[in-house]
Figure 1 (cartoon, rainbow, N blue to C red):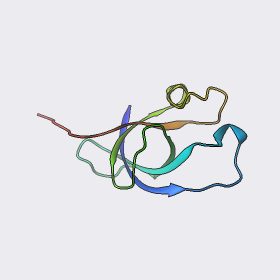
Figure 2 (cartoon, rainbow, N blue to C red):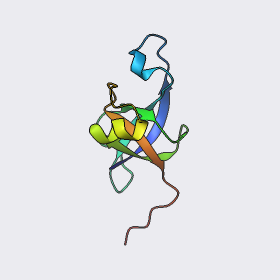
Figure 3 (cartoon, rainbow, N blue to C red):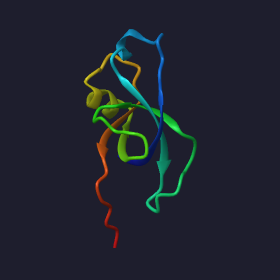
Amino acid sequence: MYMGKVIGTVVATRKDENLVGSKLMITQPLNMDLKPIGEPIIAVDTVGAGIGELVIYTKGTAARIAARKMDSPIDISIVGIVDEIDVR
């Protein structure tokens, strides 16, 4: 699993039929210091995340399992909203 921050949304009226009904969010990957790393990604939201929220996301097969869409072209899914981080 990875951590990121939702920075926007994507609306695609024409898309693969297996993505119909999926909420697409632009997510900026973060390191443990909450600093941006890499380029923003587009993720399917499975938990109702909103813009500005810290989230946990998965990649690959785990992303398709989380979205319950095994036949879809999903590579990244948001699977949790972070309430608190405690690193010692």
